[in-house]
Length: 423
Image 1 (cartoon, helix red, strand yellow):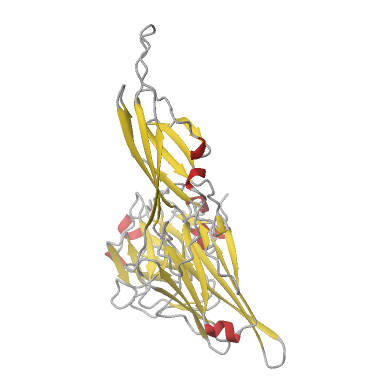
Image 2 (spheres, rainbow, N blue to C red):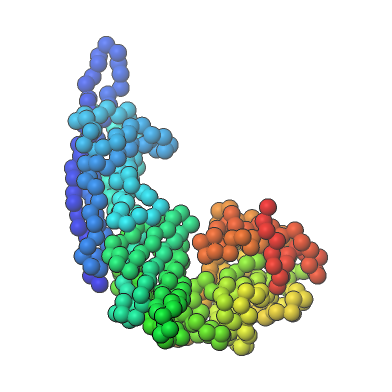
């Protein structure tokens, strides 16, 4: 899809008086010209991207280099023609002041200038380019859905908010760029006159600002599988297809994002060397068994291991991946060896589908245990609280805590069993 950029430039002049007061020997001030441009950098899939509020309604704030607010204008149109600034370093922000967690037809635009200097008696020019700062999501139901179901709707949720897209909803929703979960409910009428429903789930694990995600829902009542296809607005991004299996057979070669969660990580054992005692735990977050064959364990995209055994993980059960045979005594365990090491300073630990060659499969789950709010643990695992097993919460450091229950080596953790709730 061709990317379109629609510049809507607006010139805003902040003129500073340079009057010299000889009697008081005040240092003369400088002059500032601010150029504000509005750029819509979304691929307009259906050419119906809604315009934001007029640029003259944008809020403009001038900060000094220490991030202290110097001047604030609720509306650009209300700014005076001349503004005095003391010599020094500053930057300017401009925004549409409508940054809601989730809302239809509500694009939020934000821009921030580079730091610039105001010099006595001189004119300084600075540009602020305002761009879409949230994620755009729209839903498309295929003819199969429209012709075979009596009712259907989709809920898109993040940790900040959610939107419900009814079957007749054509508007685009705008979200803060947080992990998004997709929940589709499809209802049809059976031959005996009763109704039956099924639910499809999917996700957008790392949505980006300035991108449009168009989600296609396709299903028929008699089929055992359905699909959610997510098309990203940039041609360089892959199309992600999420397959949903409604039966009791193990899911294989297409495990959806969030079907497996990483729920415990031991990266710094005390009772054993790291080469012997590292491990992590996963949880089957589905109502069906999952075949772990050819799932890829990956760390930081630099180390990986492809599971070479058919291992069936029952629904809502735990499983342990360990670095050595002596790591833990858990029955459900797979040894991945030295191909993956767990950094003590944090790393991105993930599970992916195999794809075509082990490097291009879709993501199942990923957690960065080195980011803000994650606890640290020496001789104790990091444990995801069971009351935070949702996709949005499982990636947040605030959902994890340090284990306090001892296991067979003398270190602390609960490998292969239910984690205690975090305090």
